[in-house]
Image (cartoon, rainbow, N blue to C red):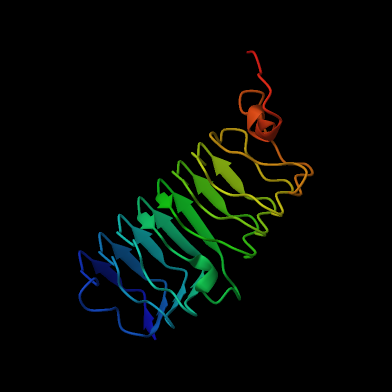
Length: 187
């Protein structure tokens, strides 16, 4: 087990990170592009200013993980071990990612670009999308109860196929719930 260590400016795109358990570690300005972090356990770790595009994550454990200012393109979080999964995202570019069928209760997404992200059948109860761009992201049979979308934009959520009880929206973004009806809303 590797504990309380800071990994800075390392390139894992050519040589993969060692298969270990990383506890309370920080990864700063590291490049994980196209690497394989499968079967690695991360607990209470931070990824800051990291490039994590197209990373393979089969059976990876992500427990209490914070991503800050990271680029995360094409990640399949649904390939991870979902037991104890807890994530947070701030100022991240998260595109073409999949959270299919995951339980992500109380997940904070803050100031993120979440384009073409798959939230199909994802349980996002009490999560927050603060100032997030959700262009072309998919919410299908998702549990969105008590989710805060008040400052989110460019989303399209069908209330007939998603559970949105007590979700919060603003009058400025309510059109994201009505897109399928092809109606015009005047401000």
